[in-house]
Image (tube, rainbow over all chains, first blue to last red; front, side, top):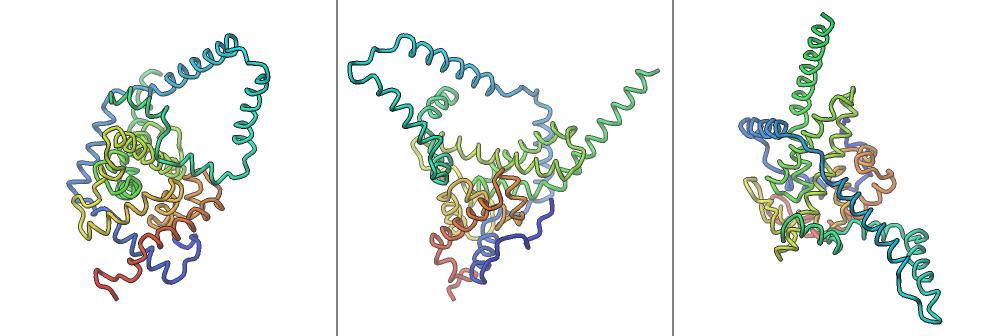
Length: 132
Length: 187
């Protein structure tokens, strides 16, 4: 992977200067020989630790199974709709499905996905792992 | 006799893997740390953590890649992902402890230059969306090409160009005074 700068979008003079200034100002100090040695030592130390497969996949599997069970139970013994409300669940489902699958504003949904403020379910998981 | 030959072959293969990994670390160490430093918002300890973890993953995947160029692409993809995960967890920790998202990052730690300016740049980058920030850092600050960055980010080139355009516009607005600045003296 080479890094020629010629395959970038063309920048005007002022933009080019601005970007160069940012690149110069926003960089860590170069590593000394001692820091490089310590860095390599850090990698070696990590490699010597016993490698455990991440527990994420089993956790996701368990969560998915739980969600499926909950879905089945809620479908089976859910509350009986009142007269005139029979279609409300279907309407609700179709509206979020519409939003999820038919939305034309893909960039907006991407921005939501990219938000660093995590949704509450992430935070709940985090509280378990971080003991918060 | 066959078992002995296999053991010798296995030792040669392991030695070859070691040699390749050492060369790979030596080639990419500085850049990987710098990319990570920029992606995590100037936090030196976090950058080392992210970069070292990416190298460990590269070591474990080394046998799957015969060509170092493919390993390199894969490695920087992992590095970008690791840095993103770090930012997410930092945001969670910060939210839990009640601080602001940038409190944990310390762009001024053991770096020469203007710490105030670095902090402002880190904050400006922090206000971009994830993809805008990653595209800007990879292309404009690190010199990856648009097509390389598109591969690293798993996005089409057109999307990366769009992110670059928006990121540059946002940063120029955010750091407008920087454009009239030269070496700490206003022109």
